[in-house]
Image 1 (spheres, rainbow, N blue to C red):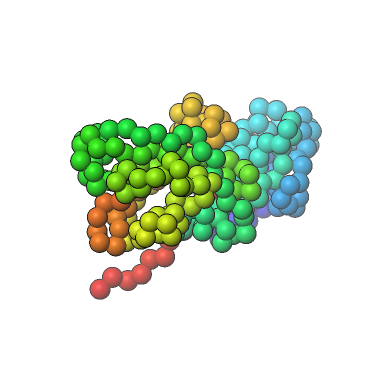
Image 2 (image 1 turned 90 degrees about the vertical axis):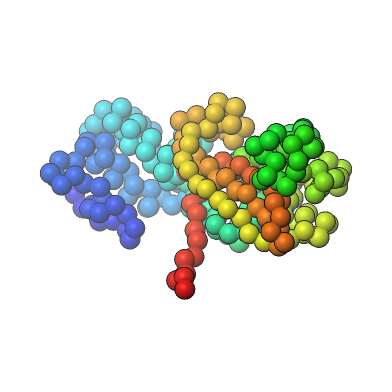
Length: 252
């Protein structure tokens, strides 16, 4: 079998050095070639048909499909499985989610889950530039790309910074654009931390994914151009639909 791989793929397509290829992986490699031939939206044969074609058990086929689903190469559609489109590339920059999605020709959107105001706890106070007990907004929104649910975003900002957030702001629009265009606040810099997690049952329900699907979690603390704390954001991105890019330059 030919295990030619594309640039950036695992060395020798992930084949162990002893050369014994797990049966499910051999099937996965064959299905991956089929995926390339079918193209986006192409319908895969049923598990039963694939098991007969490759002379393996349905459980072996199921394991191969499971990995391709987690990698974002396939997606469920009704009772079938189809070839997924390319992952969304989100830049690690101060650009908003809206800008990143539009750059790839997709239509960004957000669906508001909740907008609440509560007394600022001590741990959050320095990150949003508020005193303990002062009112802070918490806005939770599902992220959309062409109406597909791809993430979940929680934003914390002090009421002093955005006093009329509940009446002036369109929750389907960019929060960054609102701060800049309506309130005259510009972002200066931010600290980000990225980790992989599993969504909670509630988060998985809101995003519309299985709880076992890996998520990319980004914590961001932003400051304005004067260096003053501005917002804290916690964003979950579907691991099967997103990748992140950045540009690295030489320092000094």
